[in-house]
Length: 321
Image (cartoon, rainbow, N blue to C red; front, top):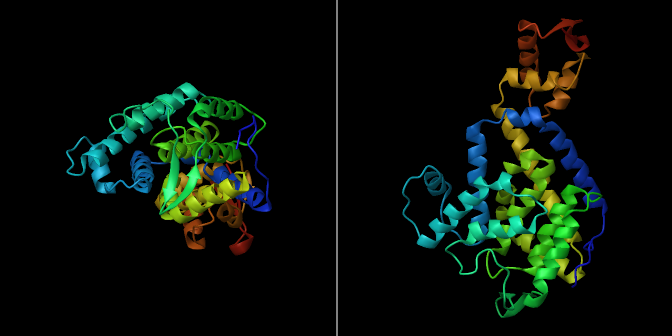
């Protein structure tokens, strides 16, 4: 398959449905919501991201061991696995320094990620590669001579501002896996660079460990890649990855709703611009809290003089001061 400036895919009802669902959830996780995430939660999610992405590649280190490495503690484990984690920690610490449409940054990230693991880290392969499952060749990558211009086309595609970022990130992930530009590290680079692309428009993706769900659904991940190979389009992979993003956002929202305090929810809600509202309006924003929790929050808001109430029972309205 030769890449054109715009890689082939179809917009399906599933894709449209999942984009709408993701957009709604991202609306809930806006800048105010994001700022309420504790440093501890961000750290936990970063650890989950590293552990899950490397586990897919066969790394055996646990969340506890990765936590220890982040805290500069000594860990006993396979030398290669420890080095993979240390490299991943370094590359994720540099995440905000990467420009998503920069091929130079992409190669630099691979150099950090694979340093000490392969001899040509940060360089495209100079030999043919294929993916073998059992006795069968699952995927034969394009000739190595074609890799530089195929990747150049792919980075030109990333500059297309008319393309939705959510779709663009999935297309890049699939097409990069198809090209298989490196001797090793292609999978982890695909997942890393999808995060770099997404966080450009949606900062929450810097801390959203969707790799955890990819790790938990590895068979679906590889099936989506295979189906896209067979069809010559990235459509099946786009559908799969959008589903992963949607579920990851839902899990984050559920977690945040459990750990947010009443004052955090009230501040978030009032920042949405309501001048008058009902308990139902409040619960429509925080879909996972109980009616009793909503009532307690609203009582706290009155005590703090954030708003006043009028009416009784289900007729109660709240007017913002």
